Image (tube, rainbow, N blue to C red; front, side, top):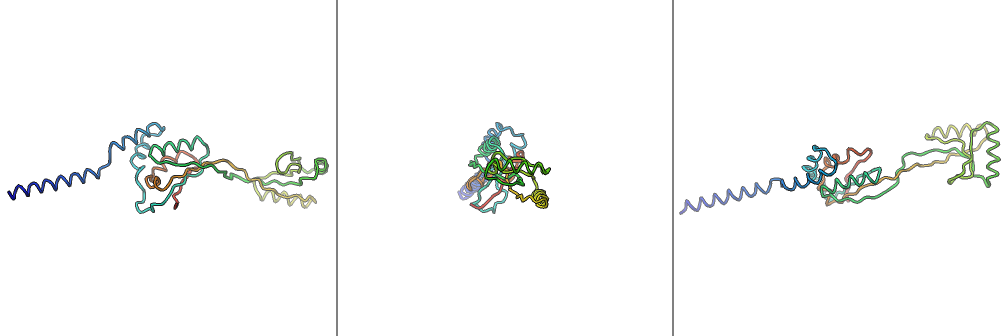
Length: 217
């Protein structure tokens, strides 16, 4: 009788150990579902497998839990939609925001605006008679002024202004930022902890100028 009890106890321990081992194994069905969703997103096979395997792992297990992810600098609405679709396939929701980003600043050497168009044309005629390259500005915040040169470099604009000053022409430099519309995606902390840096890099590496960062939130 004692031998039977010991045998049953050993069998129970072995069965319990097997159940624990089984619970630690990856869910193959879940991985197949993710792969199936990624198949529709135009990704190559290696990228789909990497995303399916690593999308729910964190690169740093000691990373603070309350960290969000900001994906920055998406140039078009179409690109933002593609990235969001790939995140959604990994069950990672995101929100989009639109902002203006300065891509360059032009430096305009100008006179005026003048009190009237007639006065501006009179001054323009004097400048052109003296051989100074110039034209009338007919739109924008400097409408009614005179352009004496547009430069992408502030130093070149300053050289132009200084040369005009030596000729007795009191010009000034106006800066004009040139912007483009960009989109950012924000991933909340609860979803961000499910997404590894490697998975994000695989999603974003085809989009020029797009990057991401984790931040406390």
